[in-house]
Length: 254
Ligand SMILES: NC(=O)c1ccc[n+]([C@@H]2O[C@H](COP(=O)([O-])OP(=O)(O)OC[C@H]3O[C@@H](n4cnc5c(N)ncnc54)[C@H](OP(=O)(O)O)[C@@H]3O)[C@@H](O)[C@H]2O)c1
Image 1: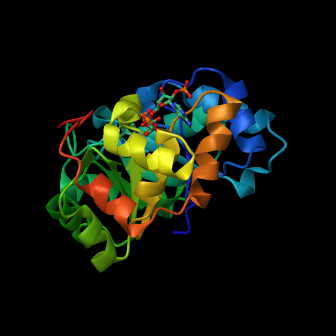
Image 2: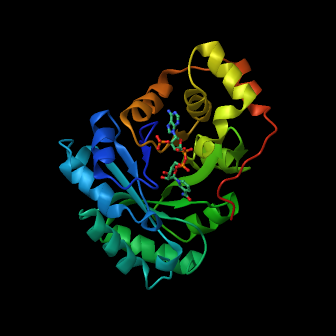
Image 3: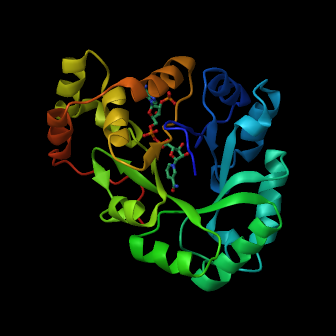
C-alpha cells in the first residue's frame, strides 16, 4: 500500500478543526481507532474539509471488544457510522487480545473486506510470529503492522519481517510522546542540522526502509514541522549516534 511518509495520529484530538488544518497543510493519512473515542471528530473534520474524500487514507482500528468473530462486522459498521463514511481505506486489529482469535477474527475481517467496508486490512502491536499466524488465516494481504517505533524503542524483528513479507511498518509515537525532546544525542544531532529534536526523531524513523509514521500534533506549527521533517536527511553518523542511545522507553507495553 502506498502510504504518505507522514500521516496524522489522532489519539486525544477532540476538535475537528485540527483534522481540517492537517488536511489543509497536506496530510492525507488520518489514523484513528475505536478506543480513541474520536471517530466522530475525525469524520467531522474530514467532512468539513474541502480536500476530497477520495484523496485521503482513513484508517481505524477495532478494539479488543470488537474482535470476537461475531463482533467484527457490527464493530466495523459502528466505526463507519461514527466516521460518517461508507468504507475505510484501512482497517486494523488494534491488539491481539480480548476476543481476538487468529483464525476466526481474520476470517471475519476478510468478510468485512469482501463486503466493501474496508479496502485493506492490517494489524497493530503484532509480533512477527503473530503477524504470520494472522496472515496465514487471511487470504487478503495484511498491508501493515502499526507498532511503537522511535529512537527510544523498537520491536525486534518487525522491520526485517516487513522487508521479507512486503508490508509497511506504520511507526506510532515517533516522538515517544515527547520523551525524545531532552535526549542529549537527539539534541546534538538537531543542533548540528539547525532543527528540532522532533524533526530529528521523525527523520530517524523515516531513515528506515518500508517505514512511515503518524506523529500526533494539534496545532498548525507542529503539523507543518512534522511533515517538513521528511526533507531532513540525516548523515549515516547521525543515524548511528541515535541507534546507540541506551535509554529505553516503551510507552505502550503489552
Ligand atoms: N496502534 C497503537 O496501539 C497506538 C498506540 C499509541 C499511539 N498510536 C498512534 O500514534 C499516534 C502518535 O503517537 P502519540 O500521540 O503517542 O505520540 P507522538 O506522536 O510521539 O507525540 C505527540 C506529542 O508530541 C507533541 N508534538 C508533536 N509534534 C511536535 C513538534 N513538532 N514539536 C514539539 N512537540 C510536538 C504533541 O503535542 P501537540 O499535540 O501539542 O502538538 C504531543 O504532545 C497516536 O495519535 C495514534 O494515532 C497508536
